Image (tube, rainbow, N blue to C red; front, side, top):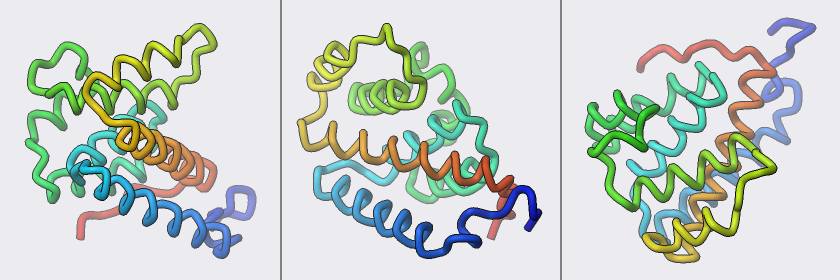
Length: 153
């Protein structure tokens, strides 16, 4: 741990434990809403790509594979809007996740929610948005801490 860039999770473990508890609750709510772990991992990867979080990518790309996400989807994820391999549920989740990652004041959040609502229930929208909010927070923890890439298990 670098004294000028302390690992936030080590410096204040009680706060990090609360983050992990929130992530566990969010994953449970997502599953109860009918969302797959694979879809949630696509959201985690896309948000981590946008934020440039190498540590989170080194965790969530393997987790996506373990969850059964096709490698092609992982490979073309930055181009999900153009890639025909994503279904409407995935597209809706990715749209929501990106809208909470790149905050654009000109963005019409009502229109994004309306579009997502064509393929996701209100409960699923909430679950995706909680997941996106939390992975954004974990990205920032890892970026602030300068967490390294996690080696494959």
